[in-house]
Every structure is written in structure tokens, then in C-alpha cells.
Amino acid sequence: MARIAVIGAGMGAMAAAARLAVAGHRVVVYERGETYGGAVRRFERDGFSFDTGPGLLTLPAVYRDLFVKTGKQPLEECVDLVQVDPSSRHVFPDGTEVALPNASRAGVVQALEAALGAGVGDRWGDFLVRAREAWDRTRRPLLEEPLWTDWQVLAEREPYPAVPHKRLLRTRRAGTLAEIAAWELRDPRLTALLDSHALAYGLDPRDVPASAAVLPYMEHAFGTWYVRGGIRELARAVYERCVARRVEFVFGAEVTRIVEKDGWAAGLELADGTVTEADHVVAGVDPGRLRGLTKHALDEDGDVFPDASAPSPGRFTVLLALRGAREAEAAHRTVVHTPDRGAELNWVSGEGPGPVRPTVTVLRPDDPALRPDEEHESVVLTATARPKGDWAADGSSKPFVEMMVHEAGAAIPGLRERILWQETRTPGHNGDETGAFCGGMPAPSLAGGKGYFLRPSNSTRLPGLYRVGGWSHPGGGLPHAGMSGALVAGLIVEGPGFRGSQ
Image (cartoon, rainbow, N blue to C red; front, side, top):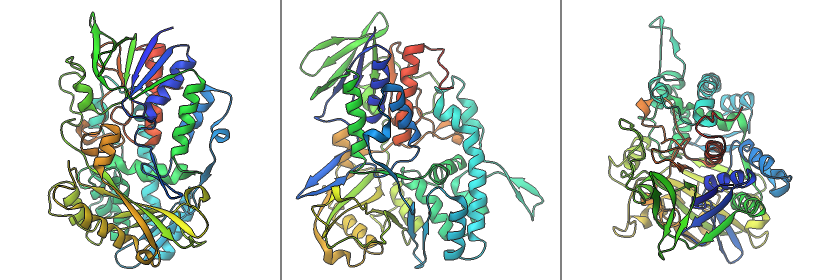
């Protein structure tokens, strides 16, 4: 039985902890905050409840596998997991809108054709077929296996297929999402639909590789899911599974140093001076913070993964407590697209002035657990914002909130008159809770792009030290966090020869 010290109680860290405990190891999780879940948090006030992190789940099979492998109770006995239908409603600047059914390519094509015009749905449907090819080519190396030592193969090879060009009588291969939109979709509304999947992770479609086509594909292929009571309930269930497997949690424990002995990660030092010994250390923290815990080089020379010192865009959230009942036909999720896509992308990337009118995602769960009674409604607005340390310093928080509420009015009738109170959470709030630099959010790992869109491997150059969670392979997002936990557990239990799930 090995002693495992885990830094952080995020979703990836807890997924690894539960699997390691089942394998017979003694696991202790050290969390500097007072609760578990990382970015998967909840805000409560006056009988209202809100998810302040992710509000929906894709690829629930990842957590189903976790619960199957760590106990007798399956996931569905621990949380109430339901499909969201329609998967999303989209409101475009020209006034057109469309509701997309859940996990149905044919249904999505039909809805787009009816709402946006002949040929539009077919172009999106054809795109999803090509996106599936990119998914099939990258699913295993990017999600189910440890990052290859020759990861340059993933960096150089663009998995999104080339497309025949009738005029040129040859094929051409898109290098970015923006080129897919320009060459294949050829409609500003489809472009906005495609871009929104990248923007939700802080990615710029003008720069992100074409392999990011897997992001909308995942949603269309595997569906969009909600956990009754909020996604925080998923974090609770994972935490309780850890406790049931005798994982020990120490909250309020700030780790200040990874102890090394004979060139091996051999324990942790805490802020109060306590030193704890371990045979392996698993770190579920921001890479910048991790680098401050050890002087040991963690990656090989020549690795080109994102610079931990460069802040990434974050999630700006507005929580709305509304008077009045939710309309029966209201969509769970509505995306209101910006009237100036270029200005938004420039601002988010730090290249243009702002703030500007953003793309706003409006979450309106039909869930009695989130509201005091049937005469009120709990709503969450989210938008991607440029990296910034202190939103209060220059007063830009208030006008950005006003813009978000204004845009959300296209999704909620009479919104301003219904607001009982509102709570603003800047990316800085997320940074305070998770330790992420400027509250940045990690994106999923993507092939192509010369390796810049990959995440560092779970193993490190310091033997005994492993990385888990969104800032390591296979990147950000709830499913990816769960998969990172499975990979780290496999590497510790089976050793460096572990090649992933079969």
C-alpha cells in the first residue's frame, strides 16, 4: 500500500483519489480552501441556488465509468442525471433563432434548414461528419491514453479531413476553425454557432486548430446533460464516493512545498510548517502554482505547451434572482450571439478595446431545487472575458454586467423588470477559489497547432510527481478532468508502462 498525497480537491484530483483508494492505497487530499469541487461551486441566497462553474455535462460516460470502478452504486443512483432537450437555443444578431435538439444530427440539420434557410442545415451536417473523423482520429491519444513521449506527432498532424474544392479541382485542408467557417459553412450564423464552442473555453477560432471541430461534435454526438440540483451535485457525489473509499480530506491546508528525497517527490510541506511523507504526489493545481512548489524541472526541453505565466481568458458570471415563474416552453440553455464577432474576439484575446457586447449563455434550469418557490426563477448568465487581474480597479465590471443583462433580454421576456437581485462573479472569484492565474479557464487538449493546444503530460520529470485536472493532459472541461484522474491512477497503479483504458 502506497501513501498518496493529493494537492487540491478539484474534480480530476478527486477522480484520481477514488480510483487510487480502491486500488488499495492510502490517499490524503490537501485542499487550501474549505470545500471540494474546484471550479464546480454553488452560490446560495434567499432560497435561490446557482451553479457558479460548469452548468451542463457532456460525455457522462466518464463519470459512469468512475462510479462503476469505485463502488457498487452506479452514477444514476447517486445523482439525477437528465438529458437537456433542446440542447440549446441560439439567437443571432439578424433576429433569426433556432432550437437544436439533443444528440440528433438529423434533427439538428432539419432545425437549421427550417430556421436559417435551404442548404444551411446540410452544410452543418456535412461538417459534423468531418468532425467525427477528427474525433475518431484523436479520441484515444488525446483522451484515453497518457500523452505520448513523441507528442510532436499529434502537434504536426491535423486530424480534420481535407475537403474537395470544386473550383480548384483539388482538396484543401483547413488549418483553423475560422477557415472551416469561411470555406465550408459560408454563413455568418453557422460561423457564430461554431465559434461559440471555442469561445466558451477562451479559444480564439482564428487561431485554434481545425481539430477543435471535436468540441461541437462531442455535444451533438453524446448529448448535453444536467444534474438535478445543479452540477455541484456531481461534485458532491464524487466527494462522497471518495469518503466511502476512505480517502482522507484535509481542508484549509495550504501546500507550500513538494518535499524531495533522493530525486523523488516524497511528501508535502504545509503553510503551518507540517511536513507529511508520501510515496507519490498528485498535483491538481494551476501550472504556475505548481512551479512554485518545486525547483525541479517538470517538462522536457523543447516542450511548447502553453506558458503558465501567460493568463488565459476566464468566465464572467452574473447570477439573477427573478420574480415570476419560468415559462413552460423556455429552453434550458440559450446562446445570444454578439452583434460584432470580430470586436469580441479582439477584446477577449487582448488585442482590442472594450469591454464589448459579448456572446452570452443563458442557463434557465427547470429545477425546483434552485428557487424558493414556483413564483421565482434562478438564472445564470456567462460570458468569456479577457484575462485581467482586478476587474474593480478600472470600473469595467459594471458596464460589462450591463451588457450581459442587455443581451440576455433576448432570451428572457421582460428580464429587467423581473430582477429581484443579482450577484456578479468575475474571473477573479474563480481565481480565488481555484488558484488559477487571473481566474483563467483551461481548454481541452487539441491536436495540431504545433503542440501549443496540448496540455502537459500527467507524469513529470520529477519521479513520483503527477499532474491531474484541467491544466494537464487531456485538458479542461468536466469530462476531461475525469479522464485525467483515470490516467493518473493508471500510471501510479500500473507504472510507466500504462497505456490507457482498453
